[in-house]
Image (cartoon, rainbow, N blue to C red; front, top):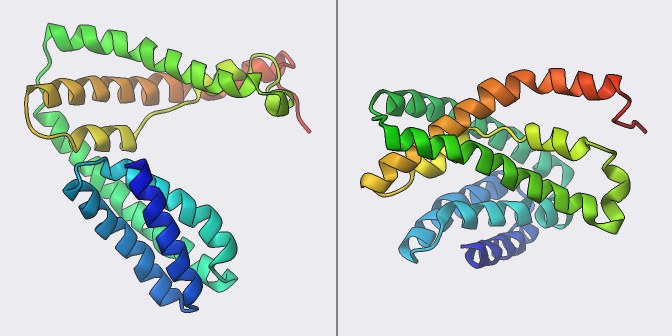
Length: 208
């Protein structure tokens, strides 16, 4: 999926550099999303990963070298609108799916284990940055803990779970994902400001 995303992103950047019409450029990015996802499914690779990688290449190299300032502004407006629409649709689907979830003791145990596992994975991934020589100055004491607690999960996690094929494993994964996302939003999200104030009052965070 990642390799397919690289190919899609590089190909799209070449096409974007060859035109100077924001309407055509918007259609090209839309074609990458729709056609690239369909191609990923046909090749039996991860569609979300392919499109995310392609989007990263278009959003960095493409914006810098293949688009004019006018095109960048129009693209941003278009995809911000699409993001708002898709987020609204996704949360409606989340609510409808919640009505049919089945909770049992096994799922509860799995969810209870998944929450600390996700936090531990987040801590490990953020902690790697604090170990790199060029980034150490950007990580004052205890900021890794704050970034770990601030890693709120949401629509993408639920969307990936809902995209799984039908079957018993899908129901279990969706249920556990819902619990992790709810814990992330209700517990981590609602206490993040308090954690930030606590660390700031203790002069833990440094400002430039």
